[in-house]
Image 1 (cartoon, rainbow, N blue to C red):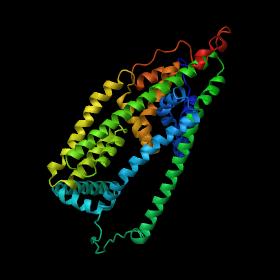
Image 2 (image 1 turned 60 degrees about the vertical axis):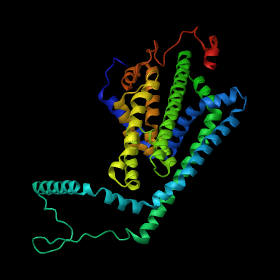
Image 3 (image 1 turned 120 degrees about the vertical axis):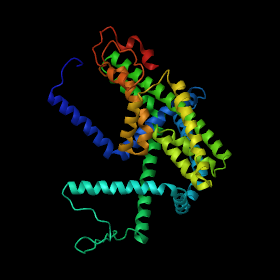
Image 4 (image 1 turned 90 degrees about the vertical axis):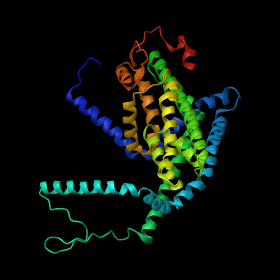
Length: 401
């Protein structure tokens, strides 16, 4: 297959298949996304589950239930602790906007210049394209008529508030449904995931295929779980340091900003940039001068550079590296497809793709492009005939392990 040429019909079928997969992922995200999240969280909790099952001799269903209760109990406690200050900041949003307008008044001139230049360019392109010159609202035209721009009826007031409340209610219902689906799927993956993998290995036609399947599953569980655990610890330290710096600088609700920094650090590049902007805006609202407001985001930037350029590469470089260009492309693609949860899943999904490519001979070049030194290419393809003497009965312990 590697040395054969792909004809036009095969290429078109392959392209249509890929588009069909993306179409399904997009329009079936309400059911697919909770399952993918459950799979990723299952990889993160696989080591604690194994400890509870093998060392403490707890049944797997009971161990899975204890892990889920502990993890989401901690998440619920932190969410409850930050919900009150977050609600307070949302209620102060109108006041904060007016304060920010006053503090950023020195940028009004450059923005007006940019807006005027943009309007002139738009008018020039309209004239060049044969369109009428753009006219400002409520300004008389050359023939004496007045163009009036009206707003849509019901855009504000009680009707707008009702629509906003309905959208919030529908969004909350959809989120709770997906959250319940994820919790249910996670419980069964933790309790019965090994039996599902065992059944999948049993249907492989040859011993080499069974061994390759076990190797891929083991590498995915080990690498992705270690990556998620390491990144979670690093992000926790980043959130803790940011909480301490907010407390030392006198910013209100340091726990809120520390948790925000912890969550945003899961999103490569874009997350820390959003954090810097948020810290600057909060600083403008809290401190009397712009220069003082620049201090928290400057410290945030230093923390991020130290973590992103020194600590994380030093910890992960030996076992797990990905091409930064493809990391950014994966981030933008999954964010467009699934929103904020897709951005969280972009790196783990890219890591799973790399592991699969490294263990399938025909996809090894793709695994090398994705990043890091690829694993040695297997001597046999994924689906190949095995000699009659090499049967699963010769080495049952390897498959059991």
